[in-house]
Length: 427
Image 1: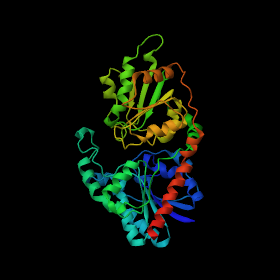
Image 2: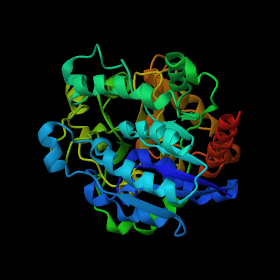
Image 3: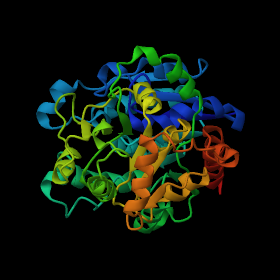
Image 4: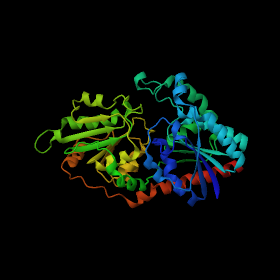
């Protein structure tokens, strides 16, 4: 059995999107010949919400190491708030000691807290342990460089320059690369020719059916967010102006729909929930201003505060229909699509026409997914009417797609890269 050390600063019970790859893979690593241990940051130092139910999905035999981090209330005074920067010194010290005492065949970074990735080069040089990087999002990117300041992430000027400096330190010594998008891999290999021949694979997040059972068993413990007596069409996830191209066709079609006896728009609600990463109560609406432009403020509700993971699943299951808008960035892959699909609710998806999400959703037999350059008002009108009058068919999901995109299958693909990476280092 080979030994795998996973670096994931956020981990259950912390409710962060970037730890789900690890969380849903842990029960399957041993089947593929890898004994996994996780090094995470003590939740007491995390700056994200918690969902204690997440712990129910973690196998009890997995060893979890916790490191400290500098207190955010102190480091934020000098502009260093990210958990990656606050925990890096503790990570280095703890894992140095761990690698001195124990043998590990590979280190696996699966996180969007990118600065910690530079420690891979240090541990490889000092302890001879190769490492694989999971690029769930772009690290150093020019995407926001020409965007208006109000559309750029917080502290963009600083983070852009820091990322430009740190990314090559981590990438040039990597032994393998995993990403949710082939475009991310192509960009990195073009940027750093030294990694041109390392093992790499595009692996989306896996579909993890046990989550639906956990959510269903605890549904009574969550406060309802949707309006009783209404037809509720729901999206839960981040917002942003980059999604306006996908949302605008829906608002245009909704505005043009008649409000008569057959279609009572007054009994229809579109929900956009958890659209901001800002602290609770401090989020800035990014969807409601667009709804107001179309005169639809009475039909649209935006809740910027994020909700817990299982509260999300319960709310999706309570909806009458679901909507997933994608980013205007063609490289963006919506990893959130699998929980939506597992609800077996009528689903409308609108993405950049080059997004891989379109083909993935269609594999399941769901045909109400479109590029925003091809969707027409009649398609959206038909979907909304079906949700209102309850005539939309429950998707009969393809068994082949269910198996292909399961967390178990995706874990096998990750382990294939692990095996290739360790062999690559021996060449």
